[in-house]
Image (cartoon, rainbow, N blue to C red; front, side, top):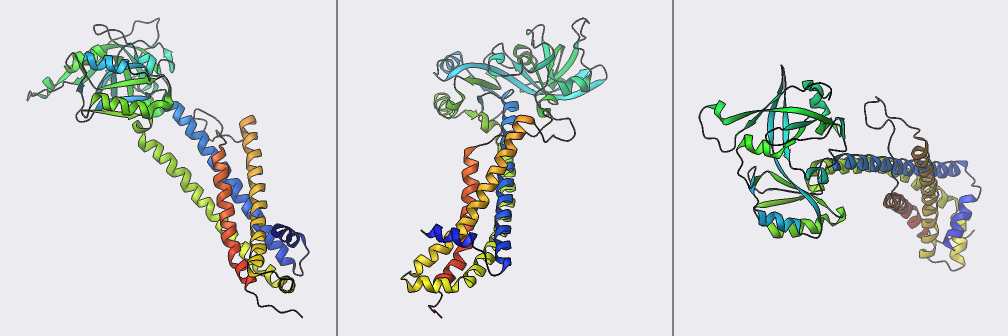
Length: 406
């Protein structure tokens, strides 16, 4: 019943055209704000999915690192226990540290990861190797798979038709106590096999080689490692798998999920997303001032109607609900219109990739978009809540109007 009154008041011709104009401006601003919110959240969702897919190619589902220091001891019994976990599909042993890579006169600092043969099962680096081939060699004859940025900076020769030259790798020796700095580092030689392209952070900093070579150069013990990277049968089980592995291994080991390996990245992305959402919510708050004005003028316009309703037995609550319904009607029309416009634009972007990214240096040349139902609910709830609060004050004023019928 209350919405029937509200709808008739909304459609009815007012004595002052300003009331109609302000009402439609209010609807338009709400539609614009909700449209922008859905669009921005959908674009952020698209970029978040893209970044997660890129980082998933390098980071494993679960990573075990030392709780303190750079290395830990992992016995054959502990490895067997990890392998026997129901959630574990495969795991790879890692020995890693910063190193200096020299190729003729070119040199660059890299983060060198020594990996075993199972690394191809837990990481997508092999699939992202787009020049040369993914091959890490053996302890005695090691090969290097470098990020494309490293390959470019040091001019690594990846042509299989040409004999590759030896590249110098300089690594720190573990637990070196010699006063001579030259004796605290090791120098080894390696050949380039291929390069991968994943994301600039990895392409410019990481290189992959044989774990035996790294352990030999750094002086690791036979059962000493820097990390264990684990591939799960179902990524959604990462929380349970983490808890079981942490309980199994004890306090000397730190077990991290994929999210925890990139906490700063994911937190930054979420902060940016909600900061923009907050800014766009301010537009809705501005629209609320228009709504207050429109409803206040409507209350003045309908004073006689209010008195008639009071004479027919309508109480303060009924009058309050009628004008609250008017505010919610304005908010609902604007919200639905904005969400429909945003959905159409997003579907067009997904289908035809209309809006392009400037520069042309990114992996995609268009804005990625992903629609999520929770975003729709959030945007609609925000708009309706602001409309309700804005409508409350003029509705309350209308309900307290003194009865007079002339």
